[in-house]
Length: 246
Ligand code: NAD
Image (cartoon, rainbow, N blue to C red; front, side, top):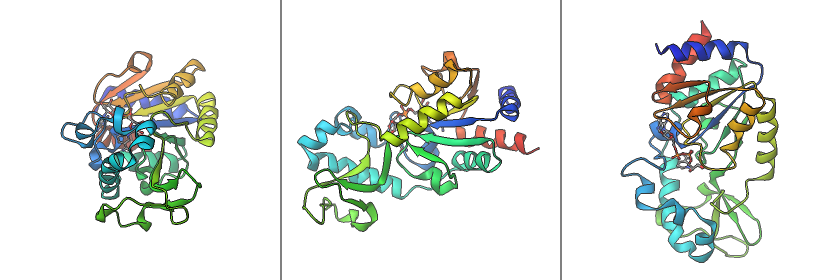
């Protein structure tokens, strides 16, 4: 067992307001590629182009090529042991909230109750013209027919935050409150470079919280972290939970 996991368990046992910030890395073991996974979605679709709101407005049909694949990949994915470990930590009353940058709904499917979706959820679609909302499952995505608003016939957009769009106000303000009150933050599978999400652990740290980072490699946050737990989150998080159960 990694000695750093033992140290993390010691901090967590004493914590009263622990939160987690998760990123694409926690879902890689569920088969959803992060921005770096070779051969994944983002190898074929440059996120700087396909995940920008300007592109969606200018050429929605082209961006929908990527969205069809994104919905297909997320629909076919199931939570992995890292998602279940965080749900367990909430259940054990150690974890107060999961703030996720992911849009795949896997924390909720694993049983986490207090999930703040910082970048929205790909299972919902919204009409940018009249604001009508739909479940993605209301449309047969497999036909590759671009879903349109049933009222105004405009092309729908997934309820996810594209580059260039604002973070939903409630997610922003709730996360800020949790970050300011946190005494420990688990930072799991994020490169911590996409702002404002990347400010959450930095805000918490500046107010005295302990940062515990779970990643396969060092990130821009690693030099601020109190504990680095190197390895796949699907292995390291369950090990942490096991220690806390005993
Ligand atoms: P990122 O792709 O920039 O970084 C992923 C990080 O996870 C890397 O640091 C990598 O080393 C680490 N990682 C990969 N596999 C891991 C594993 N098994 N265990 C532990 N760590 C692992 O992701 P980001 O920081 O979340 O930023 C990407 C943005 O793209 C986010 O804003 C998110 O909204 C979006 N996105 C979401 C999904 C999803 O919903 N699953 C997938 C791709 C991108």
